[in-house]
Image (cartoon, rainbow, N blue to C red; front, side):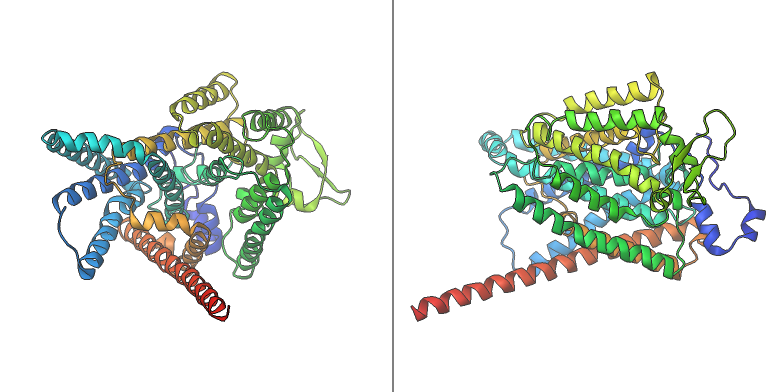
Amino acid sequence: MNQVENDVDASTIEMLSYKEQKEAFVTGHEGTTPWEVLLVCLSAPIGVACYQQLMIYNNAGSRGKVEDNNSIMSSRIQSILLEAILVWFPMVLCQTKFLYPYGVAFLTIQSTIVLALRRLILSKKKNKPHASSNSSKNDYEDSSKIRLDFLTAYRSSILYLTFVAILAVDFHVFPRRFAKTEVYGYGLMDVGAASFCFSAGLVSRQAKPQRPTATSQINLKQVLHTLPLVIIGLLRTWTNKELDYQEHVSEYGVHWNFFFTMGVMVIVPSIMVPAKPTLRGTWILPAAILVLYQLALSFGKLQDYIETAPRKCDANHNATSSSSDSSSWSLPCVGFVAANREGIFGCLGYLSLYFIGEYIGRDFLWKRKPLWKPTIVLVMLFLVSSQVVAITVSRRSTNLTFCLWAAAHNVLLLAVFEEVMKKNNKCGRLPIVMETVNRVGLPIFLIANLLTGLVNLTIPTLEVADGPALWIVFGYICLVGGAAMLVDWAIQSVLLGKASKAEKEEEEAKKKD
């Protein structure tokens, strides 16, 4: 893999402002391979497996002991420290230049520990035949809890991996091949936004088995949920402009950002009334969107428009390609659309990923069916699209190959987590902070973005050596984890306060009666 890690030569860098240097540092990249992206992401389930196996082994040795409050607090602190070492650190290490050989070696050691401890625990169980029968019974009784745990771990890992990438990308320690690709290629950061959309579909109202609710109530509630995303998106755009913060324009556009995309993922599905159950929650809807969108990209010259159109309209309100070949085009120009075409048209690909997630959730995840079947199908479709039909993967347009790759990647990662949780279902609890992060996803994602901005405004990231950069990113991840615990504590305190107040009011009402 011969990649140029820094695509701006030294003489050019000296002529640029520091903001321009940072923008050049994150642009023009061609990515890596889908298999290396998967390798980096596997650091999450391997870390969780190692953590759980050590906790199982520790619990087996301390069974029967009576714990006081101090010992419980001490055990909780030890669990968080263990989570930091076994879950957070490998995710940071594997997203740096230290992936080879140190990251791979770390994951190998963790996998070895998991296999060794499992074998040791199983050998002990063989000496207790009665316990094994009870164990298998409990396994079936707790199947719904296991399912929830592995889904929680998967969703939290997406957040963690994203937290690491959004800061690490500004340091030289982060390989340039992992950054967002400029037009074509497989980038680690490319799959982040796609994973959020896919996972949102997995837990959507249409995916989950539940009691029917009035459509108007659902729509109103979902529309209200978009308001925080829109407000945060507007604030981010405004602060970026006011602080003259570095921007990668070809990522989403001039004004668009990820929060607007997530707002679209909430509002559009909520206003799509499922007139026929054959559309929502099946493969038909995402397939139709992807095929029609790809036809527009390939034959309607939309791909060329997204890649080469100017950001502003001319006097005649046209956006005309500067190329002089036969493929040049001329389209009516709308200023906002031209400026933010990646973000706006990219929503079509992300919506298809949302609906694929909805289909996987409805037909497999919540019905307790094996996830390997859709994994194999999606991998085959991805290979056909990329190798046979030869549609080059494009993050910038979220084309057919990109969406099939992102969907296959996420279902495979989900299936790995499922296997991990099945193997560790006996006394294997989730890492404490990981479980917390899943509960407070949006506020902690916002905090992570604020901390990323703070680090960039206070530290000259381009001048930091690889070793210190690694520990800065790890320290930042520890701060994010601590912030998640504080936010969750604050929310729980407010909820408990409201519950106790309601109980008091109810008691007073009874006394009056």
